[in-house]
Image 1: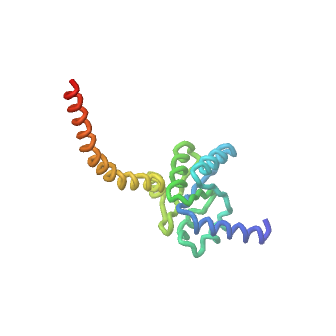
Image 2 (image 1 turned 180 degrees about the vertical axis):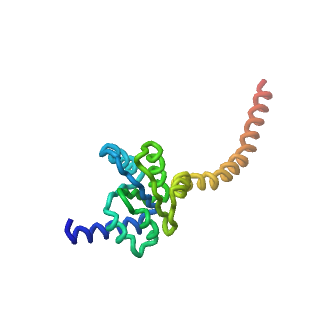
Image 3 (image 1 turned 120 degrees about the vertical axis):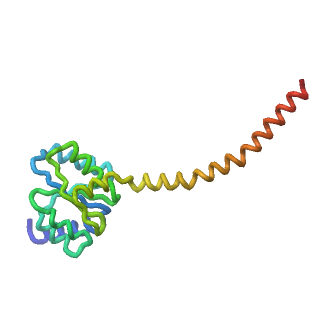
Length: 171
């Protein structure tokens, strides 16, 4: 890898660290290519990505970034998982670590906040952005549907009474 390629890689990694909602760093020593492809496909389905980069280049890319504190985790054979959704990469990484003992989460970052392995698990257990939006919309919509039901109920009761009266008069 020549100097221009290294500079381009550092630039790409810098953009990843700036734009990601969450970044998770893990060891992957001993994982097969099939395991790594499985991790990549799971992460892609969730809207995230997986990146293996030289630790030295990743540390250079981290300089001056909000998540610079995760540079301490970049030792040995490390892989970086990331996503724009603040919980997707953490959720997939945590689930994958439970399924594969060779994938060991070291920590990560969510914005400026550094995460230890327990912090990554806590982020993984949080609801996703879409789930939060759905619950907020449901909470906002519930009172409106209750009001509509309460307003509509007397009208249906009156209609039922009128039809009963008509049936009595016809009989």
